Image 1 (tube, rainbow, N blue to C red):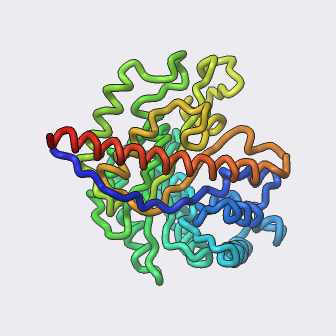
Image 2 (tube, rainbow, N blue to C red; image 1 turned 60 degrees about the horizontal axis):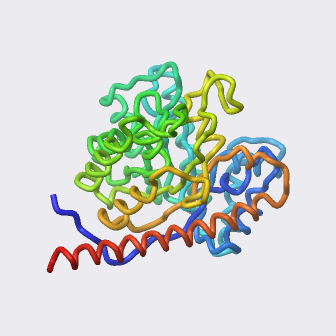
Image 3 (spheres, rainbow, N blue to C red; image 1 turned 90 degrees about the vertical axis):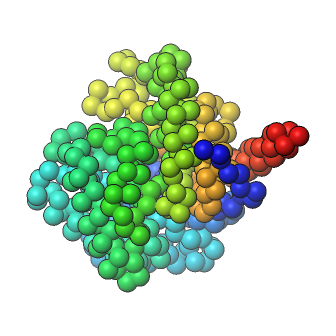
Length: 356
């Protein structure tokens, strides 16, 4: 199939609030939003843990009412600083639950999140694929039913709420964008789409933190195949937003005795929690540029592109961490746009040569 090439780049810069410092280290949600705005970001993904920390700091308790009040205060600061709330995330451990009581509790929690999203002024909630090790099923029929029911509830909200399903690279049953896309297609709901994360795609198809080489032996072939499928199959209208991030190559590789090793945690999860980086930073090594080029140049995605990282250093108590990471993210955004513009120029030059 011939690939299209889209002549312009229409991406809006956003950043996840936890990428500017962990709430557990005392980094304030509202201050992180102000700092994001000062560094030219137009949107934020509100990380639920950051919202919980703000609710506790102001009310001394985390409950329905304090979370709603925290959301109202968050929106006020966003409005004052010209920031949009891209989404509320991550709505964890939802799909494929085998316990009826756990499923009932999950839908009860979802209804609370609908209320919080309205208070934040966003119409989008992100749902990562389930990575619980027990009491879940990989039956796609059941998972489709879960997402379809959730989307149906979202449609009944006023205004309606959209759901972005994300394939997490250490998901217990679903760990690729391909399977999340299959679920979204089968559910066939207008308000259900996917979130594409460059880290998760590269980490699953190509990367391997347990290898001295940092990649799978057949990683190149796997990545090429997944990008070909993406080009041919993915509908850009169903990509509700993208997350862009890279990671460090671990040396020595992850394994027993490594400072990041946790026998209870999948290796890619430990790698992600400790070592993710903003796009095109010097220490990064994953082939995220190839993924971005497919998404923007060939599929024609336009919309929010959010800097989402986790890193051990974000848990530090240094009060300058939010500003440091916002500055790095701004530089990373400039490098990302420069890369995409160069890719467009190269693609145009290749087409001109082919036409001769």
